[in-house]
Length: 152
Image 1 (tube, rainbow, N blue to C red):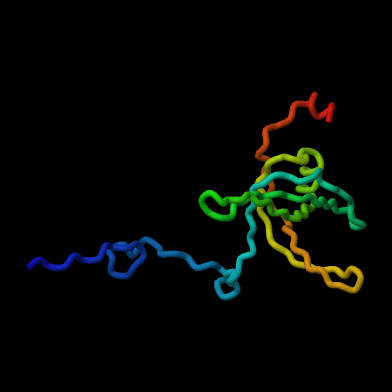
Image 2: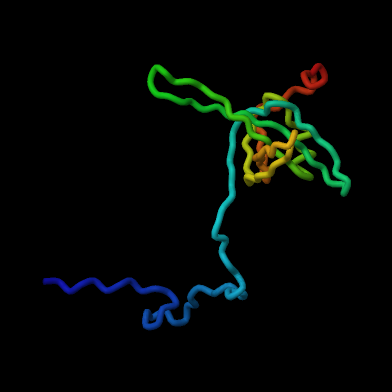
């Protein structure tokens, strides 16, 4: 019977023969650093439903609102039906500026952000809303020609 294999030598571990190689260094504020225990991340790829509505806030920040359409299929086999889900997006500052200059209705985009919930009241009825606050936007549509932008 053969002797069991010895575990591999690990750097920075006592008795490994590599005592001069330091092990992992803890974060300088390890006691203060706490890992996030939750994630609120939304990734969508779809088509813009309208041109961005851009405005300046009273504090000098720029904000853009736009709708994004994503398509999906329901059912199986012959009974498949394509449906469209609409998402409300809010973009701030440089992203709002980018959207104002480059994004148009029908453009295909990748967006990444967080899901926020709110509500408002209309005629005594509270209406819940959901919107995505965008952190990243990538334009997937090909660039438009300058001439076609002038015509549009």
